[in-house]
Image (tube, rainbow, N blue to C red; front, top):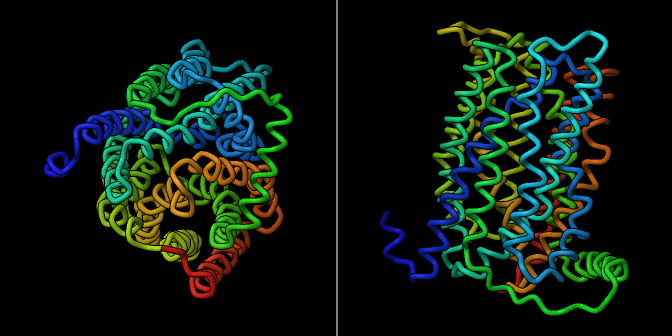
Length: 426
């Protein structure tokens, strides 16, 4: 790979480990893309429980500040992350013991166990995501940061596609095959964290004497200070709040729409997911270069606009429902257009969400800024998914999609205003 020849020895080593981590993480995430569809189609979970399942993947970020404080005072980051990986991800092995046919009277118990295992799985993110920024910020030159992050994310997406396609085929062959691949996903998830922690951690951890609850209060004070004093970053986070509500309130509803509205099977859902991931892979290298040379708020316009058009064309497919079948896949014309925009969204969002905040801070502030970002992600996850489900149950698919589109339009206008009125300092 030509890029490796242009890196110094330290960057090259970090990049190779970052690629390995991203690849394994892609296999894990690809197998979990159908997670919500499995829950409603194979396990017959309720709509509200489905909203909780999606909510868990984000609401854990409410505890990002607490996790950051623990990590700030823990000297051995490698040991901490590996312990978190074992505790949070190995419980996926539990699914190997799920019965092929869940007894009628015990179905709700298994639904709760399913939700509990994934709440634990997602909780590892509050330690892993801020650490990724710290690991990479200490090893990547700022000039190469976006580019290398983009390449690693491309590898992540490619292996995610392979994993999603495999999971879809397995589930159409046997709807209970999640009992086979979920345990494998748990083991791979642990291995991926072990690979990440092989990157040299250069952030100095200084002894902290302040009690953790007082320090946590100081952390929340830093949140308000950062948001108060850094206007461009504050505007970006408001844009994220609007985008986040739009995405979280429609995501689970779209999963229901695929099942009850369009009658898709597992392979069809996997096809649409892989189609947008293919688009994401094609645009990631370009977006990786763009975010390194573009104000994150301008980049956010691309991201928010793409999601807005994805939601719009998904909604249109309910009205313009022309479709055709090919090798067991049900292909809707409007959904094909929708997945192109979803691919643009998925190609840009990992970059904007993962490293956008770091453009407004110094390297030693990266964890604090990302923790603010993660906390606000968790905050909006408290109410957005369940509100989306209730909007759908009361008003239907179309109205729910329309609310998301309006919120994204407001976010785009805010990004335009912010960049013009408060240009980023050099």
